[in-house]
View 1 (cartoon, rainbow, N blue to C red):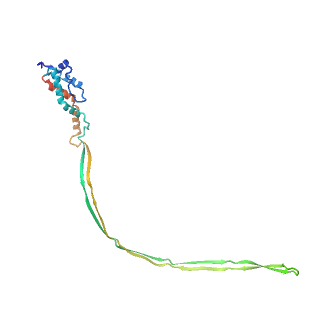
View 2: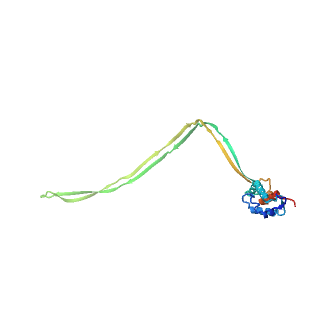
View 3: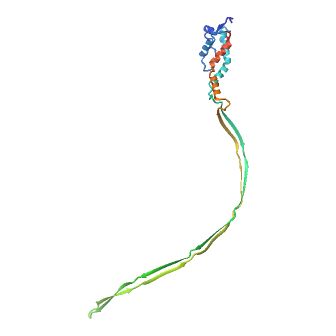
Length: 255
């Protein structure tokens, strides 16, 4: 290895494959990282002046830090509400065993008497009177016959008619009295006496699982404070972090 010192930019101009083995998290553009390394270290010298040695060192250094870079990159991709400090789901499990026996006894005595009395008086008088006048007449007819001396048959001689008269006159009366008077009484005794027993067993056994979600600001941090912290997070740049780490590792920080 040469004892002469050179800048990273100078070595890259000599060997542009210097960063071919640099490992980066998926999704980060290598050209962007390399160009920023060259720009930020252009006035700095590296203590490894041999291109092949520096190329190998960059390979193993990047592999060592790759898991950290990957995790830092993932923190910039989280989805969350920046003004919430509580956002989660809680699960509670309850085991229940409420088996038991119930026994209810009821004694009943509903003895009693009931009586109904009805007094009736339906006395009254009924009467019908009919007047009849059926006077009228009729005819009676009389005939007289003679027999000639030399004949065998009778011959009418004369004929007379007599009128007769009929009469049905008077009054027909139907009168009477009805009476329905007295007392009707219904009386008796009822009894419902005894014991009613209701007995059985109940069981409520099993597991109850409950879930609840809690979101929002619980009040320990103001919304303004969280907004300020969110701005600091927004200023974090994974490419700048990698470039700074490279310079600290491979450059002489003496101006």
